[in-house]
Image 1: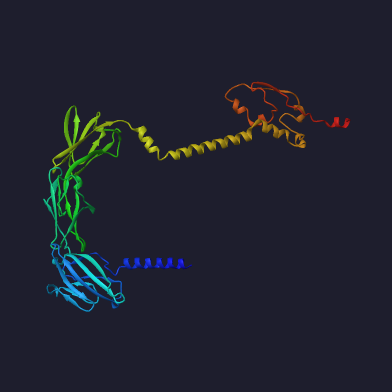
Image 2 (image 1 turned 60 degrees about the vertical axis):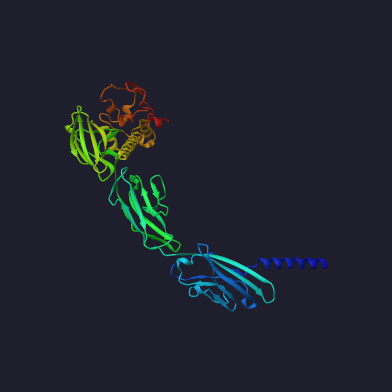
Length: 456
């Protein structure tokens, strides 16, 4: 038990010693300060111990960019001695160990070093030494940048270079960024930047360099100032020359139109400034200018045979030109146009045909139902017996019993054959054997006479 207590006490002592060694008595939130020229700068230091329980002694020193070092102030908890050269420039207020620099200038740049000795009252004779450093930069805010272009006029692609410059009236450690149409530009084979990016050289100028340019200037104390935008106008082209028409049928470089049709052709190309266009007709190895401008009108009835046309585009600024040639053929496009025009009414035709088919089927169904021979005979045989015994009188007969017997029907083929085979004649048939010569047993049931019934 005693051994366990000693071990716990030993562990606590080690932890206390480690905590004592690793404790931070002073702390600087920032190790770099970006000061603005003419403004004050406060080098804040946090103390993590009670000042009333300790005695302190320390110094603030300044090391310039040149390497020279100067002690600015020496202080204790109760007194502070400031270098006479900086008496009106730095301010130290005891017992706080922070330092205030007033009215910053470029000479205040450099590294500021704090050296502090701490002696606690309960640990007399034990001095703790703490040291911290912080770097200070002093910059002037950036003014609105000014952008310039040389030459100031429009340039021709592949023949000219353009130099852009960006400058500011005020600002230190200025960083420049170039943008075209709000897209940052980076060095390339044709884009060359100066060391501070204040100058941009485009050599040579291309079509894709056309756009709106501006520069952004910034430094550690200015987030960024935009210049006004300047337009770069580049003369280029003609590119992608094409002849088009909304009429006729095009196959490759051949346009086919209907006889008598009036056709319009459009000639277009990508160019700056806009091109001038000339239409040329080629007949029997002879060329003739027939129209000027991007639009051509052709009347097909004036064409006796296939004819070749050429559209020529010319850029006066770049002195470049391009040509597009095509052949115009006059032929009937009835089939193709019918297919194209019929596409809109194809559904109507389908609906019409289907409707006619359904109506025909319905008519055929009703005809077969009402005029079928077997159904007519079945209708006769299924009559009530009293109806069959009802006297039947016909012309030249007083009694139906005179019609009893075997009859022979002879049918002569001819045009009236279909008319003779009517529903009324079929009603008297029991079975149909032959349409030309057939003997039928017409009277199958002979009604009994009154005398015979009495005999029975």
